[in-house]
Image (tube, rainbow, N blue to C red):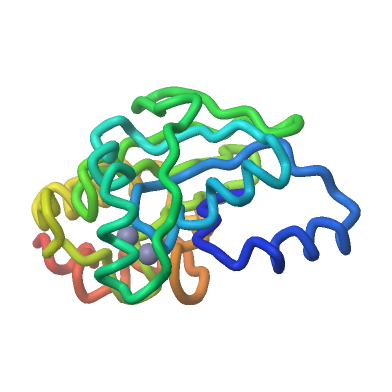
Amino acid sequence: MVDPGGDIPRVLAELEQLGVTLEKIILTHGHMDHVGGTAALVQATGVPVEGPHREDAFWLHMLDQQAAMMGFEPQPTFVPGRWLEHGDTVSVGHAKLQVIHCPGHTPGHVVLFSEPDRLAWVGDVLFKGSVGRTDFPKGNQQHLVNSIIQRLWPLGDDVRFIPGHGDMSTFGDERLNNPFVADKNFG
Ligand SMILES: [Zn+2]
Ligand SMILES: [Zn+2]
């Protein structure tokens, strides 16, 4: 599972419904809406946690404050069993996901890419028609744009992506239409 933000009873019910066994939890970045259910899901299933990049450790340390800021109950914090680095591989079943460090929304944000499936999990780096906010502590708009253009676009226009919020899209569509990172913005 990528980014269990919460609603763990629903997640567990869905796993049972699908008849699948959870193998691991992968985290793209340390924001509460992506990691808030991690401790509960680990407690329920015992699976390991991989990611995000160590640069997001401060966000995990701040889970309680994040919850308070957003008006949720305090969330137990945790330490991932493995921090991810640019160029790492994460295995899930027979799949091998490439780890791409994409700072900007948060400094330790990672994207997961399945080359054979032409599919990327991009968290809050890129959305259909938008990009992640950069007004949080250690956010950086220029880093975010560089991450998208230098590290995501080279994967290919045909790559579909699953964002942390909203609808799926493809890198090619965003290069044409995304007001923040379309090719035409950069001459
Ligand atoms: Zn976020
Ligand atoms: Zn988010």
